Image 1: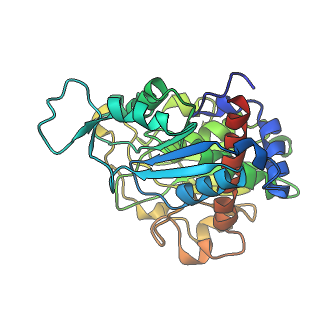
Image 2: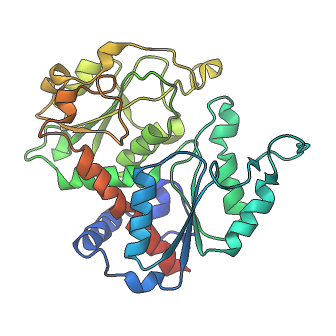
Length: 331
């Protein structure tokens, strides 16, 4: 481990990926092997945004490790929280995050935080303002359950899923699977957290050939994609691919900051359908879920034998188990 594992946000926090993947397989074979680690330890999961897979898989992983779990939905059952300093609190927000965070830390040993991008202020979002306040003021190890810019538990689960479903032979360089991250249309402006982390983790993996395809102007932040091949022609990107990872993201504002968080393209020809998949090397389809059917992907593709969306979701329990295990070991 490169440090004391006080936080889990980006791929470098997990250490060598081959070791982390081996640990994931060990845990998958015996999910309760390390139950002793969590005895009399408490995980607090804090949700500023909705969740299905993250909430269920993280809670299950913690219980597998013997932990007690407290779940707080900030928007239902808690005081409305102010996050900005210097604000005169005479509105509808009764408590400041700067008091709430250390109080939360009093009641637990590890904290998981889910807080999406606002998509109105790129600097605020990419500074991870909310997450970093938890890291600074809680006095506890903190991990990301999706933040303004990253979703590492998802990306780790994605990598586990790819490793479990490698084709023989692969179609690309030096036997590495060709993995394509493709933008797809959506009716709402979505954050860049999932594609950011997916690119980051695939680039860090020693044997993945990553290609990113999206409309011009939708370039992801180089902080996460440096070294990736970008192909603006979706068909060229799909050719010979072993895995297709579809995901919408709103304009990241890299080329034009004024476009940040906006939908500047609604080209429905990017929807992944049977024709798109026919360009691949019998490619497997992936998506983090939830997915808008017949907008991101057609029914026939997501229901095909080559769809990995359910095993991928199942592996969220495994990726989180590895992270929590290491955090418990470091306490």
